[in-house]
View 1: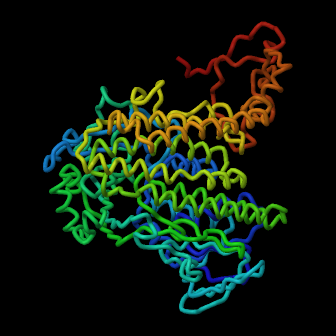
View 2: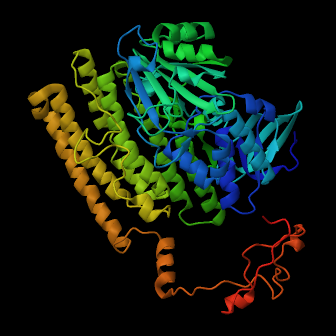
Length: 629
């Protein structure tokens, strides 16, 4: 590979995995002439074979890859579709031979916003090749050390290439080196351990298996349950103190990623820390997954001890940035990792663009984006608070998933699609109205349900008859995709968030009634949150009104209104441009010969119409080749 040919760059990205490559691509497209270097020690072949957590995308990451990075055709052609998320709990311990032995929440249709299952090695190798072709200077080397320089001066980075250490410099330094924590260690930026992670203490193990027999899971026939593929969903399997994923990552080789996140308080990681132990665990507790693994060929096994962490700061005023796993990681549940990277990458891109352009609000954006992304990292980790107490309880966990879906689809997805995470005022408002305390109170009540053996029934996230007014969590609060398309800040996020608060109030009261009866409904904490949620719904609703007034009373996109304006004077005039001469042959320049197209002998386009016909004359008798029937 290449050694450094320049000594100074505008941006140097440390790490050529997913985060580093998806950071380079928008920088190239949004900042003409920018000079980017990427330092990565692995060869292309090593990148293609690497096995990581994070093969599944959800709405934000999928939209980021497809639309922002222009990869939609590539993804369709090279990576399986994702048809939603399914969730499974054993009906009886020790009886897990088939999926029918589980209580399940099934995705009922194809998602409205398409997503994909990723073969990470293939994706990262291909992205590296695309970026290289677009002008990113890739350096196959190892970052040995670097100096972070205050202010706007260039950072100095020592890179080892073929045993020789060379120095390069860059105005902006992006840490995308994952769990090496390059900026984290340099700036003492990392927060690790359960006390810094809301009690989260997990391990993770997984295998990749090729050539599986998917009929062991489902045979594809499901006429009474779903109109989409069960197999190409991300399937989650639950038990006491753990959950497992099952993700198809390659159609050609019928490859699956099957892995576990175990909570050390309940299921110590050392008990699944080898391939033999992990498979024995599957055989005893999730036999259907064991049979899937045994039906194919195990390609690898990986175990991580305590993968979770987060950081104090992500985007420094001194022009260094931590993204991806270099910044934070909570849990693979809900497949949020690539979505959090999307938010960070777009923030970094806008900060660098604004600084290079000399925008007056560049530092305001940097501070707002850093505050939001760092806070969001903590919020993502908090999402798994007390997971070990709830995972195996089908009733409690189904309620929890339903509630967390409400906020994902009601607040976070429209926020991203409308680019509100790039509006500094909105970023600051999110921090002021953090809802972690409400989520904690809900989680505490779920723990009480589990501890006291209460039966609160079942909540199915995809059904429209579980809460009120035909609502279900993936439902959009308004037709924002159809109305606003993707124009920044056009989507009325306030309407969506206001409705989410309103339905959260309804959910809260239904949960209290189901879990604790009249006493639960009337207790002060319940009433406090009810009043507060309703007040928030009303307050944010005023923001919705303000947004409508700002938009002139409508949310429709500028491009759609332009089409409407263009159609105002439209009058259809039936006509065709001539393409044949009087001799019935194509006019010069229209026969394709100039483009190197051969004209078959003894053939004439049957039904070809001369220019006389266009003028109203009678059509000639069309000559027919001697080979015509």
